Image 1 (tube, rainbow, N blue to C red):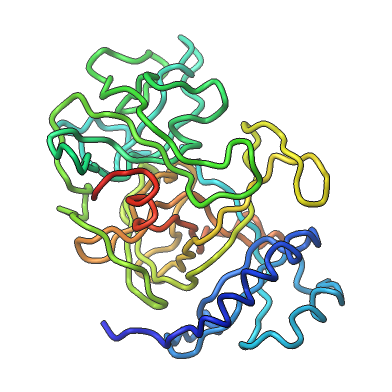
Image 2: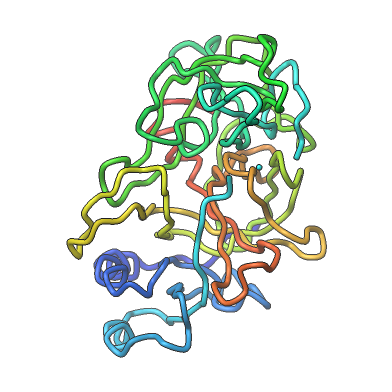
Length: 331
């Protein structure tokens, strides 16, 4: 694959310096470096992309702040949300792309409320015989009552309840800005106590990571939509989403909020007509894959606030390279 145009360091520095101000305006939902034109994506035609709730009402202070930005700038009307509901098959040995749920939320007769996707099997770099299942923090941990040792289920239980055979292992570690406004990951792992394989259903064996590039072709496999296809439209992205199960924190403007900003993220555009939507609720935790390498961990979706019912054409993912670095695991 040909590499995209190099992004000058001064552009990334200027973007980072402006982000806090842009998010403080209340209209900006994301900032990233990506393709200028989504309809005709060109890896050599990149721009600073500023995502806003209403593109017709971008305040003058935002336009003024970006007037002398050292790169072309485009505004995109889009908001972001986590993608938490169907493939409910039991997979043994355990592999990626399947449903997962924390057992502690199940109440007999009430079904299960928190379901996502077990994206991939990862290894302990110090002991490759130790395997973990990787998903999102908002799938495996959900709220501040989480604790190491919480049992994970695969598949998520039906109204009949979980069976002992559904237990795959305990929650082991997580990374998420629980008590701060910003972070880099929405990720968690559970230790796998059963036989597992380093593969994703429908995609096949995966091993190792690769850095994302604009226009890179990728796919993911989630418990709700199965395998879907897309391409990388943004890198170096910062995106804001609401996590209502998290405790309110005081943001930079002094207001209480359950919203969090994840930095250094990727945005994925659906590859139509190969796929109608990139993901749906329940796909959170899916591994984003290029070939047999993992690119990222899908945690949310981007949508037009004026048309929230349209198929989800944009996905947000944390970088696989950062998951390895911050979680201390290997793909």
